[in-house]
Amino acid sequence: MARHRTIRAYQYDDDLEDCDIYGHSVEDDFGVSPATVAQFTFQRGNCQLSHYVDEPLKEEHEVEECYPFEDGGAAQELALNNLDYVAEKRLEMDADFRASLVPKIAKMTVSGKQTLGFETPSKSNDVKNEVASSSQKSNHVEDLNIPAKEADSTHTVSKQSSPETSEEMVVRANTTPSKPSGKGRQTLDIKAELEKRQGGKQLINLVVIGHVDAGKSTLMGHLLFLLGNVNKRVMHRYEQESKKAGKASFAYAWVLDETGEERERGVTIDVGMTKFETQTKVVSLMDAPGHKDFIPNMITGAAQADVAVLVVNVTTGEFEAGFEAGGQTREHALLVRSLGVTQLAVAMNKMDTVDWSQDRFDSIAAKIGQFLKQAGFKDSEVAYIPTSGLSGENLITSSTEGQLTAWYNGPCLLEQIDVFKSPNRSIDKPYRLCVSDVFKEQGSGFCVSGKIEAGYMQLGDRLLVMPANEICVVKVISLHDEAQDWAAAGDHVTLTVTGMDITKVTTGSVLCAMNSPVKVCTRLLARILLFNIDVPVTKGFPLLLHYQTVSEPAMIKHLVGIVNKSNGEIVKRKPKCLLKGQNAIVELQTQRPICIELYKDFRELGRFMLRYGGLTVAAGVVTEIK
Image (tube, rainbow, N blue to C red; front, side, top):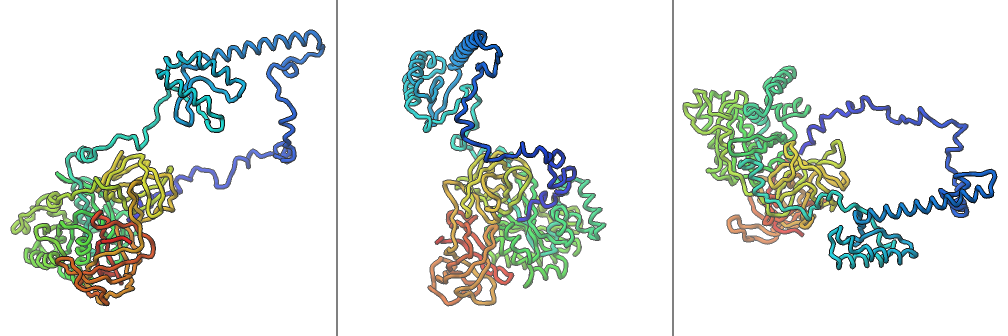
């Protein structure tokens, strides 16, 4: 996933505008002169222990410092007697003051129990302390509402403990109680909280896919503008800037393509994220890149999606270029199906360029429908919608175009998105979050972003970061730039964490529960399905494994056997090679440890893709971790 856009576009020079020059110190203006530097310089030879041991400390009432007499004699003796009397009275007043504070003071020991009164470590005062404690025990118990038996036991512990083993801290009994820890926190009814937060609306994660230049960003940018998610003033600025750049038709695409490189090249590079709402759904939108050079980024977005919108350019010649060999329409549809997406909406974009032709619409729908059926999509879960991203026809309301309404009376794109079913979330399973981005913001700690695949979390939770095996503490939870107290499965969140080094967390790390860590391995057993591949797959075949946000080099260690697609039984053991279209069980080995789960335990974390030579050659699920 891309770097956080506010951080990438941040101008750090503005913060240093009014600051002092780096390296400039206050001592440069107010220095010590060479003539007086000796008296401020520390010299170890002048520090002797005898200075502190042989010479006794002066008391406050000593005559030499307080009242020096030149005559001596009777006057000096009278002054000494007066000072002794004053000192004794002062000590008595201090003792009375301490005694008055005893009922209001509690002493906390390392054992966790409270003892009463003041305890001095000197052995000569043990008897006095014991007598004073026993005489005032009943009064103290009444003041602090502690049973007498408990007071006796705590006093005994306090008397027998030594100063070395019972470092005590005096605290006030009426201090404000501290914030409860995570263990003593009240358990959250996550299902009820989800309904309350979303206002009864279900959450779905939608990814927009398709061949490059199919109009994906323009289509969704115009939809967001019509929904009111983009300010008119901002949209006007995009129109003016795109005209100056000579790309007037890219104005709506700039809503999602925010980086300078994307706007200059005119293609989506990173997965842009935003959200909008329909009548019954809260939609997290992910705009995936369509260029073949950025397929890894597209896989990252597709792995986090529940449903998808496949955008097809119906312009004559453009559809054939994207759908035939070398185009990304087929590969994108195959990828999202292999990553668990079962609901698909096919947006026939740029229909205004063919005058809303029904024949063109039907011919393209027939070709795509046949391929999607082979890929595993059901006909009942695929919808075809004619649209125009540039003019905004049939996006949020039914079109009023006469040429279209003459033969089409189906739903618009927004209505079709509203019909999508939200999948069941793994809220009851242990917490899992796949890190898609790591960045540093102003303040303490650093930020990680990603999608919560299972479980839920709250502020202050301690999480385990794998494979680094480090512990971090969650300080801030941000969901679509809004602070939250908790987050659950399905949410795309940004967490501010502390307690560990930022270098220990990378893209692909997994934040998991302390009591149930994610599995980490370099060897795994998987069942794979080979796509169109020109060369046979043999033992030692190098591949690139794409798993969630991870892209890791891997190798086929062993070919276990070829599997029957219908019943899953092994037809042939230890084959010499695998050909396209075959279903097999293989053992994979990665160069570095990766965090992965079994498909039967966590479906979201048990799928992966295999690529070779810039093409997706296989999809698989994890059956065993070694």
